[in-house]
Amino acid sequence: MRIAAFGVREAERPYFAHWAKATGDQLALHSELLTPTTVSLAAGAQAITCFQTVPYAPGVFAGMAALNLHYLALRNTGTDNVDFAAAKRHGVHVSNVPAYSPAAIAEFAIADMLYLLRHTGAVQADLHRGDYPAAALHLGRELNACTVGVVGTGRIGRALIRLLNGFGATVLTTDTHRQPIAGLRYTAVPLPELLAQSDIVTLHIPGTPENTHLIDTNALARMRRGALLINTGRPNLVDTRALIAALQSGHIGGAGIDTYENETADLLALDRRGHFNDPQWQALLAQPNVVLSPHIAYYTATAVQNMVETALTCLHDFVQTNESALEVAGQ
Image (cartoon, rainbow, N blue to C red; front, side, top):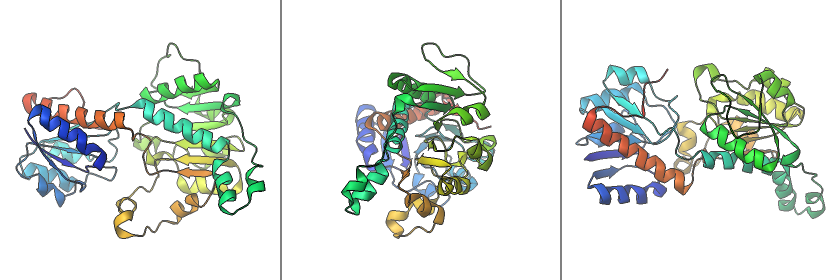
């Protein structure tokens, strides 16, 4: 089978190579993202796999149809950047990887919580200034003494609850689509109650339009003074402007942001362009009580292998049967 892969990162290449050796598939690996311009690189392929967080423009699907390509396997979970209407219009089937490693993201959320609870950013800032005495005076909090509000109890949310149970934290949850979860200790409450009672609020829900700016000025005002906000979910869940204001006022005690709202092609090309003009990003980056990361909560060897192998399996299913158990069609 001939497959064109876009958005390929160095860490993925060994897994692509192993797949090609095991299956005999011909894989053309491209570091470029899939755009209306780069889609031409897929000429001669039977299907495409891709990883990217920027939009799949309608022209991508028109270009695929022009090349008689009708199968696109995403190597990630989120699909809010896919124009499904355009995909359907051009006869393109789309699949995703719904669970490459829930543990990876859950553990990363815990890491952010501990970083912020122990004021690690402020400690490092003091040490970099040469102020050793000040670095020793940041009184931390313990996770086991915290109430953590988990917004979303899908695979990642459940993995996180297990970890929080192990730490001994009190766990509140809110999720309109979930039945009781056996074997886990938590209390399900409405979102306003979760925001008001939690020392830490962590987001694990899809980036659907109705969830855009779920955490806005009003939601932040409901949170406890000094509470922490963790977003390893989707970029659109948090109103960044409102978050910055709440941090600067001291109402919010800190934030861990792995999925940044303005995660644009300009930011992703920072290494090539050498500059990125986004005052909100700079405002967050400058604060010791904010830990920023470039959408890497998922990024472990286990997750990357699962992403590659699941996406390629979907393409085999598509080509052989015109169907995949992991096909997605949007809202």
